[in-house]
Image 1: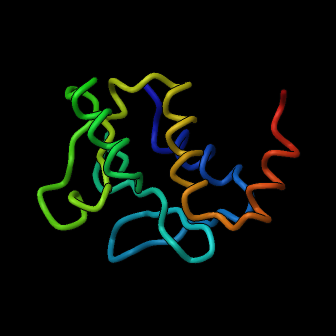
Image 2: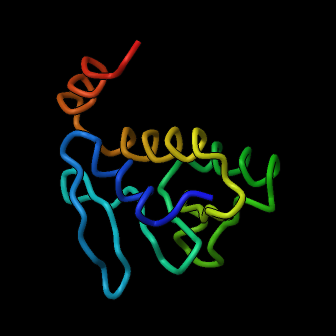
Length: 115
């Protein structure tokens, strides 16, 4: 099971990513925009598209859920760290970051990423 420290390690390995807090919730930002959070023990929140959210919710409802508020309707999705595969977690965090990162940061990441 990936830990909150694993989430932080992955998120902070991305160009321009920083760790901050919103109220009492640890978050990870790029360009001061939140792409990932740790809202409660064992759960990560991430900002993705509503189509991707729908696919994850229907494909694995034990791992993925949607907040019951306006944020859930706009693509914010919860991930149960207990059941998500480590490789999938890395991919999800990276894609959430990519949605908000500048083209320059994305190009930097793509240049450094192993082939």
